[in-house]
Length: 317
Image (cartoon, rainbow, N blue to C red):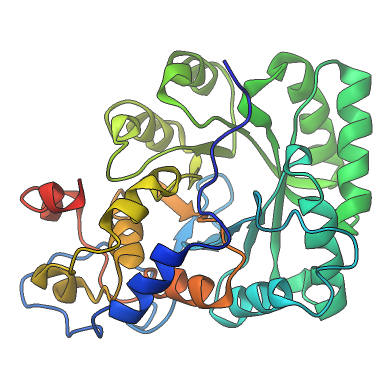
């Protein structure tokens, strides 16, 4: 099985651009639509949800850096990626998720956050993706250097690779204050047996997993278990790897999209993901400012409960 996940959102997506141009204006919330609580935030504010292990609040929309932030040296400075990070933070978001397997994404993320002076307003998440204790420590130390920080908000064991070896080191660094949270990741339902076993066996802060309107297996097994175990959940493929969004590109938005204030298909799909109360944050990847702003809009206003989608899922196929 390949350990390299498919992209969450290609950085240059003509279909996505058409969606934004064709999107409906957000409508008023329809009477009777049930909404998940947003912890006292105003209707226009980006919702935040609690991290069970600490009680801290995390914005529900972040940004993945796979592919989009893998820019050649010198290409990111002053470019659109700066605008993506600025849009994320100015829009109330904070989560930037990366990995050593994403090429130069960690380095580019670190450069931008430092250049813009946004370290205290960003939640930096990355991963360890290697075998062996010494190799894991070396790789994570490199992540500190590339991200230009002395503390990482979330360190995750990528695709559970050699997780038994890495977890004790993560616990030690958490006790030392070098990392704030620790967790595991995967991106395919074929790994759910192992994910479930680790969730039951170990005390974790975060799980990063796949979930989308066309990839709903996690809602049956993994999301309820994460909620039971008090584990925050980050969704890493909310657009089904990008294929779902492309399939919907030329379709008009259904009238019910206005009931939840969704002005694009991207917002519909993100609101679907956020409807699961166990989901803490979704991290669609993008390298475009307009996409980042569009994604953030999904995290404000109405977020319906899961049952609201029952008669609407056919439109998302």
